[in-house]
Image (tube, rainbow, N blue to C red; front, side):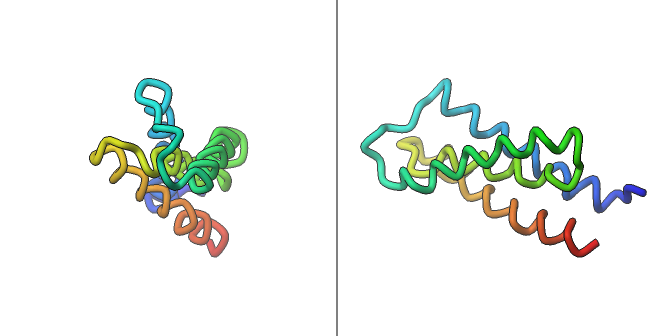
Length: 94
C-alpha cells in the first residue's frame, strides 16, 4: 500500500530530470568535480522506479550531473542529489 509519504519520497526520483539540463547547457570539462558528476549516471536507476518503486529515489542522483557547473543557479541545484540516499534509506526501512 502506498501512503502519501511513500509517494513523496518516490517523487525524489524526478530530480534526476535535472541532469538533462546538461544537454542544453553542458558543464565546462575543466570544471572541478568531474568524479561527482559521474554519479549523475546513477540517476538512470531512477527509470527502473517505474517497474520497482523502491528504485525511484535513485533518480535524484541525476542532479549530481550539474556539479561544478559554471552557472551559479544550476550549480546550486546539484545539491538536491543528496536527497537520494535519504529517500533510499526511507524506503528500505519501511
